[in-house]
Structure formats: C-alpha cells, structure tokens
Length: 47
Image (cartoon, rainbow, N blue to C red; front, side, top):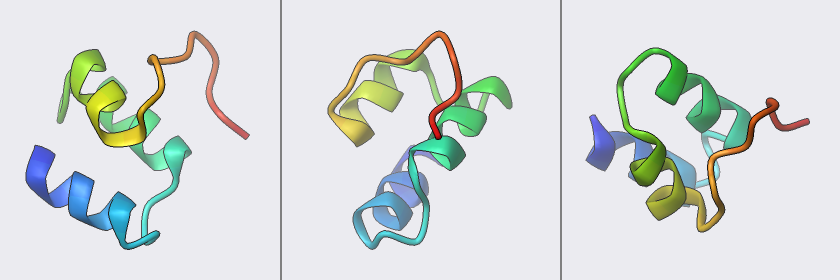
C-alpha cells in the first residue's frame, strides 16, 4: 500500500489529507507518512 500511496502523492493525485487519512485507516504508519510527504505526521488534519 505504501508504494501505491507514494506514487499517487507524487503524481499529485492524493494530497496530504488523503495521506493523513491513510494513517488513520492503518494503511501506512506515521513514519511512512513522513517518508511520503517529507513532514512529520500532524496531530490535526491538514487543510
């Protein structure tokens, strides 16, 4: 799932909010969120 989400984010088909939600769904970890977005996992959802 990580590879697919990273590809979608890199292609700008998924935004940070979708990646944030992917962590909540246990599709990826908070560490993988950082690897995909380059930012720490936020405590609040992104706008």
